[in-house]
Amino acid sequence: MGKGFTAVELIVTILILSVLMTAVMPTAGILKSAKDTEAEMTEAADEAAVKLGVSVYQMLYGKLPNSLDEMISSGVIFGDSTRKLEYEDGVPVLR
Image (cartoon, rainbow, N blue to C red; front, top):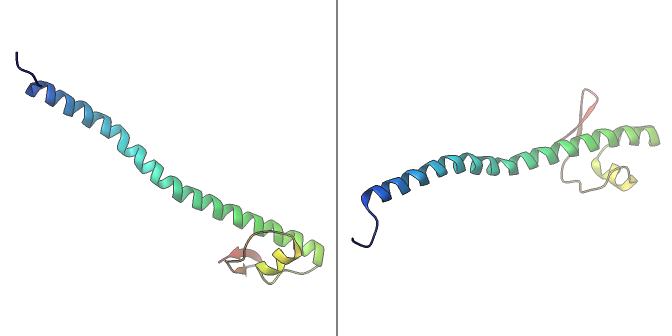
């Protein structure tokens, strides 16, 4: 008997590896899109915080804030003002 693998053993091994890879590849795609999902969730949370913050600011000061800096300096929300606050049909939107 020789030392080593037969052609049948190698083919079976490659077949098993290919079956395993078909299960792993979709999972890798899901993990890649998890970063996109995280970014979308963060953006949605920022939008919700600003909408709530605009309502609180309006109740406290009797006017709509002109910018995120105005809301941050008043203490209604916290964070950085890298985005711009605009209103579309009276609804606050981050740009």
